Image 1 (cartoon, protein in one colour):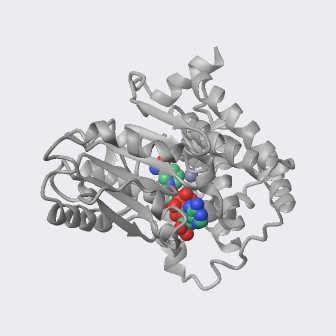
Image 2 (image 1 turned 45 degrees about the vertical axis):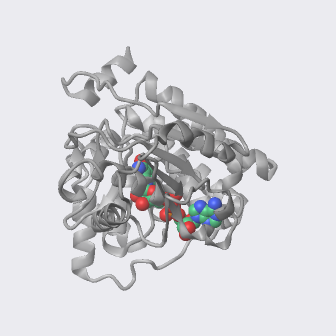
Length: 371
Ligand code: NAD
Ligand code: ZN
């Protein structure tokens, strides 16, 4: 009964969303080597170009030789040092259009959340005219995207399974949320995450953990979301609190990320994400790290979640950066606070419809000053 009441509260009188999911998925260590076979049927005579967007961390050759690129394909190496931007998407689309004689048959994104989001956005913008910034929001995309394939090399964001691609635009950081956003095919090869630096592994893994805590503790929780969230949470606890072998940890975190993404599809994230968006908008803090930085100050809202987060952090020997906002001006704090405060559904999920009576701008600002 509680579940059905909550889903009604989340939907606010709207019909439940009939949302698309990733159509095909291949899972398993080594499954990356099936990518060539997967692409083959998409290639037809005179129309065979595939565009690979790959994290430039693989420039070292680890993966380069294994990418099944043919001579007519385009392989673009992209740095993930900054989060994806709408202008970057527009420039990539222009580059692809100028270099390819015919419309590509597929866009393949290989990397962490940054490259996955770029691939989704580029696939959409190859068939929709305008700037990616015009499509930030909900259900603004009209034309079907080019066939797009996601190959995660870092686990946690859930970008491989989600219906959004989060972009920094001229006015805001907001996703292109649409039925055309999810990947047509995902390749889940846990071995691709070999070599992720430990801090990064933890920050992005904690993105998944925080998705679960916020989804499971939010007012929007329902049977659909809790079924995925509980599994993802249990997997995160195994990965970050137990002594698994590296291979087992990679496999479990990859599936935690998938389930965490599925959990928020029908619920919502919460306070950590609202604050992290504000921090990242002003400071450029990467998403996973931003979530960790704010989450440690949210004991009042997620006591059990923060306690276990601290256990995980200590077990993994991770020290979070300190005094991150020390040099922020008054107006920086004001902007951060406004961006965080504007994330209405996130606050409502966390604190209920009367959330404005439970948290003030001043309290939000105080949290930012502690980071
Ligand atoms: P990322 O993609 O930004 O990568 C972080 C760092 O890890 C980069 O330096 C990258 O080069 C490196 N890296 C990735 N794979 C590696 C590997 N196998 N070996 C060594 N280094 C590797 O990190 P992320 O945390 O996965 O993604 C963050 C982005 O995801 C943000 O832009 C955020 O907004 C977005 N995001 C999207 C969704 C969604 O549903 N679309 C959800 C959450 C976050
Ligand atoms: Zn997140």
